[in-house]
Amino acid sequence: MSDQRPAHRPAPRTGPRWGYAPPVGREISDGYRRRATLLTRSALTVGGVMAVAAVISGVLVSQADADTRGGSGAYGYLALFLWFGILAATPVLLAVAVPAAVMTRRVRRSEAAGTGG
Image 1 (cartoon, helix red, strand yellow):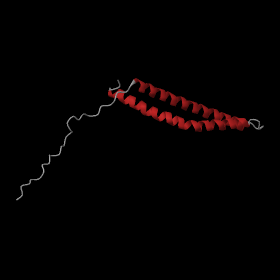
Image 2 (cartoon, helix red, strand yellow; image 1 turned 135 degrees about the vertical axis):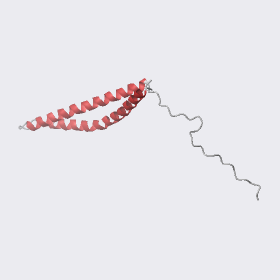
Image 3 (cartoon, one colour; image 1 turned 180 degrees about the vertical axis):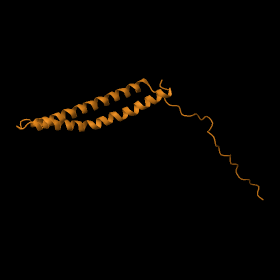
């Protein structure tokens, strides 16, 4: 027989390690709330301007179509210009609305959990 013994292996731990605490959500600051409100209002403003531009462009197209003399072709071009503006504003709306929605949801969750500050 040999004088060597196998290495001692400690029993595996099944519970949490010493000093473990569940993660605590960070407190939402007032500045974060203001930015969420500002982004939400900006998204609503951009969306409102886009909706008004869509209505105005529809009116301009119908007015250009109703003119039989052919003298108001500028209305159609103006409507086309508004459509390009709406198309250009769509990424801006998405870039403002998505973070606004995420930030607003985070603020509401913290207020519901009672850690709103």
